[in-house]
Image 1 (cartoon, rainbow, N blue to C red):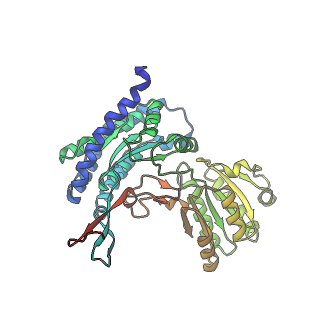
Image 2: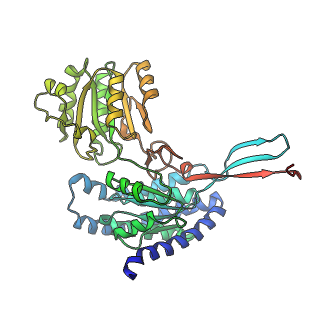
Amino acid sequence: MHVETEPTEQLQRAAHAARAASQVLARTDTGHRNGGLAAMAAALRAQAPQILAANAADLGDCTGPAAFRDRLTLNEARIEAMAKGLEDVAALPDPLGRVLADWTRPNGLRIQRIAAPIGVIGMIYESRPNVGADAAGLCLKSGNAVILRGGAESTRSAHAINAALVTGLRSVDLPEASVQVAPTADRSFVGAMLAGAGLLDLIVPRGGKSLVERVRREARVPVLAHAEGLCHTYIHAAANPDMARRIVLNAKMRRTGICGATETLLIDRTVAPSLLPAIVADLRALGCDFRADAAARDIVPDLLAASDADFDTEWLDAILSVAVVDGVDAALAHITRHGSEHTDAIVTEDAVAAEYFLTNLDSAVGLWNASTQFCDGGEFGFGAEIGIATGRIHARGPVGVEQLTTYRYVVRGTGQVRP
C-alpha cells in the first residue's frame, strides 16, 4: 500500500515546497528575478560538461529513431541556446503588475485588473531536455514555481540541467524549490500530478498525441493543452515558385522532429504540374519520403500512395504528406478535416487570397509567406516558450511569460458602502 501512495507523497512534498517558493517569487521585484535568470544562464554554461556527460548517458540507452535521438541530443550549441534563451527572457518587460484595465464606477470606486502569477505549474514533457530550462526561465520571470517531469529517456539530462539551474537560484538567494524536477521517472508520478488538485494550479503537457490525450482524460487540474503539431503549408496558385520551394524545404526539413515542422503539403492544381516535381526533388535530396494523393502521383508517379490516416499523422520525421487542391477553400477544408489547429501557412503573392486564408483559418497560428517552423516562442519575441497552446481557453499559440499570468482586481474607494 505504501508503494502505491509514494508518488502522491512525493508530489505533495514537492508541491508544498513549490507553493512556498511561489509566494516568495510573487513578492520579488523584476530585478531580482532577472538576476536569477542571468545566474541560471551562467550556471548552465559553467556546468555544460556535466550536462553533456549526462546527456551522453541518456543517448547511450536510447533505441529510438533518428528524429527521436535528435530531440534528445544536447551539444554545446544547444546548451548555449538554453542559456541565451534565459537571458532573452530576462530582457523582456516584467509581466507582473501590469494594469490590464482601469476604470471608475459611477459611485467613485476605481477598479483595476492587474496581472499576477498563476502559482505552481506542473510541466509534463517528453524527450527534449532543453524544454526544462525554457519552462524554468519563463516560470521564474512570471513569478511561478514549476515542477518538471520530463521523459524517462532524458532523466539524467533533466537532473543535470536542474542542478545547474538550482545553482543559479541559490547564488542570488531565490528559493531552490522554484524549479524542481520530478524525483522519479516512474509513470505513476504523472498520475499523481494529474490528480493534484489543490497542489498544482496548472498543468502544461508538451509531447506526443498519447501524452496529451492522457492528460486531457485524467487531469483534475486545469490544463493548458498542447495538441500534436499537424502543420500544413499551402502553395497557392499565385505563389512565387522560388519562394515556395525555399519555404517548403525549410518548413519540412530544418528540424523534422519539432511540432512546428510541416507534415502536409497542399498545392493548387494549376501550379502543381510545374512546381511539385521541383519541390519533391528538393526534399528528396535531403532524404525526405512522401505519401501522396492520386492527383499528386499523376504528376510524380513514383510517390507512395497516401491513405486517409497518413493525412492525420504527425510524422515528426522526414516524411511529407502531399495533396493537390482546387483553391483556397479546398485547402482550408483539408486543414479543417485533418489538422490539429496548431500552425498552418499559405505561400502566395496574392494579398487578397492570403488575407482570406488567414481570416478563415481556425488554427492557433497562421502564416503568410513564411515557414511553419517560425511557430516558436523565441521567434515570436517571447524569449522562449513553454509550449504551443491549441486549446481555446486562456492562451493560444506560443506560451510565453504573459500567457503564464492570470489577473486579480484591486478596488480603491473613498468610504463607499453598498446601499
